Structures are given as C-alpha cells and as structure tokens.
Length: 74
Image 1 (cartoon, rainbow, N blue to C red):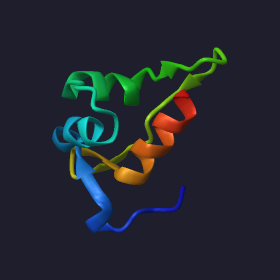
Image 2 (image 1 turned 45 degrees about the vertical axis):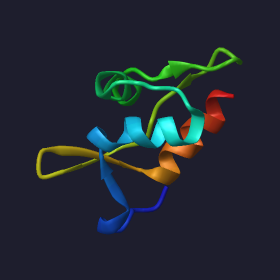
Image 3 (image 1 turned 90 degrees about the horizontal axis):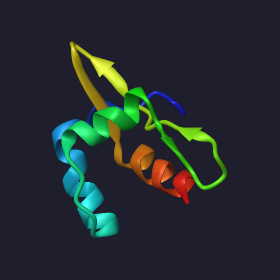
Image 4 (image 1 turned 90 degrees about the vertical axis):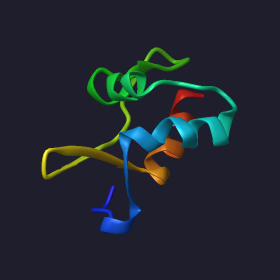
C-alpha cells in the first residue's frame, strides 16, 4: 500500500463505527487492535492482518485498509 495522506488516516476508536456501517456487526477497539497485532485466520487458513500506521505514538488505519481486510477474510 502506498503511504496515505494525513486526511485518510482514521484512529482506531472510529474503526468499530465503520465496521458497523459496512457489515452491521459491532466489534470493540480491542478487537481491532488484535487484528493489527495478531491478525485473523481467513477461510483458507491464512493469517490476515489489518494494515496500520503509527504517527506520533498513535495507531491509525484507513477505510480502504479496513475494506481490503474484510475482503481478504472472505
């Protein structure tokens, strides 16, 4: 993935709301953090991680990365 623009970055606090909007399923901030650190096993047995960025001690991701993560999970 190319380096995102500053306006594209979203804090982990906002990812659960985006997930609810896209899938209708509620997940916590801790779950999203675990997807970044440990990943999640998809239907093919592969480990898929949510792509993230660190800026000034904060962890960010993008909406595009969340959508790609959901697509890779299947």
